[in-house]
Image 1 (cartoon, protein in one colour):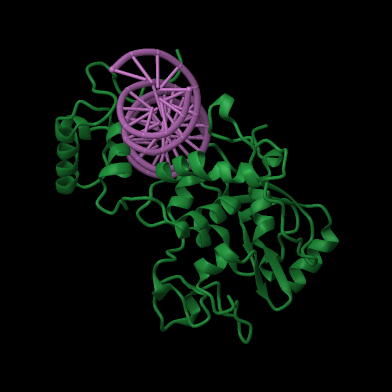
Image 2: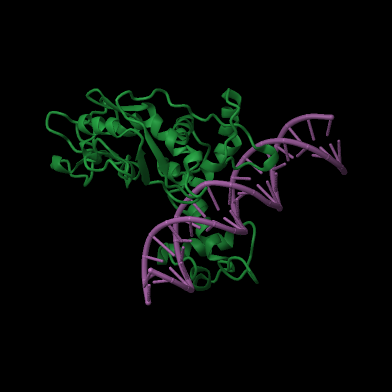
Length: 292
DNA sequence: AAGTGCCTCAACCGCGTACCC
DNA sequence: GGGGTACGCGGTTGAGGCACT
């Protein structure tokens, strides 16, 4: 019983790839492009599972793979992103050009998690440690740096599964009055959404899913205030993201937004603060996950 | 030199989601 | 809407290399 295997394992090569297999796969993809992984081995003449081909290409053969050790700057970014996003390696890898999720995951498990263990004073066991049972280690639970006073309490439930990005969030306001105040003063976008609802995290014009998937490497995506541009067109302020409000632009204090996102734990618009550390907290709030 | 234990990282596995019919 | 398939993801494994005895 159980799940049907992704492909027949009979007669397929397993284990380390040979130089010849690499060459065949590379040449096939260069000619035919990525995708169609299931049929690729047959068409390319490889005795490999399609999944294996995909993994080999993504983690090793892609031309834009960056070789060599992970730099201190990259390491710093990984730590910050992990603090914010948890074990969403693919998302983290997306912020490190040339690095793969597998590479970052391995680097974390073999190097960075130890640093956390060394520096952590916490006794909390990380639920999702990927190390083998006897090697499981303690990881800093990243307590929120500070709580934003004007933001009301939400019972947040992150829709998060084992292998998916987190873009949707359920909010259940615990204090409707506080939410009213919050909406009125800080996030008019929430107007009319006071009961249980499902939406992109969209606070003050800063949409989580857009934010996480933005191309931070493209300078055209930022205006003079370093707000993200949706279309990369520097001439149209209406397409800025977060939107430029009249006399009230969402400022990033002159910093590159990536720098800001990873260095600063709070984005500020006037005196309204939405705390990214709090975001990290609920992203990591495993007790609130669905599926319990 | 041989044995042992530890570490690294490429590869595998199973699951959830997206997509198509 | 339901079922089947493909893809992408995070967790886990294990081969190979290295250090130490």
